[in-house]
Image (tube, rainbow, N blue to C red; front, side):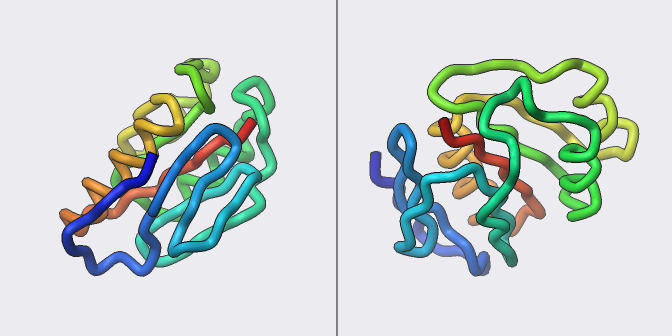
Length: 123
C-alpha cells in the first residue's frame, strides 16, 4: 500500500508498506526499524513482539516522543502490559497496532508536527 502525505516538516516520511517491507524516504527496508520525524534507526533488534523487553522500551522512551506507535507486523499483538507501563509512567502515550496502521498513523501525526516514535516490527 502506498501512503501519501500533503506536507510535513518531518525529515522522514513513510512512503509505502507491504508485509516484510517498509519504504521510508524512497529507501526500502526489510528489518524492524524506528522512525521519528528527525531520525531513522534502521536496525531495531526485535523481529517479533515476544522479543520486546524493557531495554527496547527504555530506548524508545529516551527518544523523548509524546507518543510511541508500536507496529506489530501483519496482525495486532500486544506486548506484556508491564512494558507499556514503562512509557506511560514517563507521560508518553503508547499505541499498539498492526504495522500498516502504525505507518499511516505515523504519517498523519508527523504531518501535524507531533513528536512521534514509530517502532515497526518486520516479520
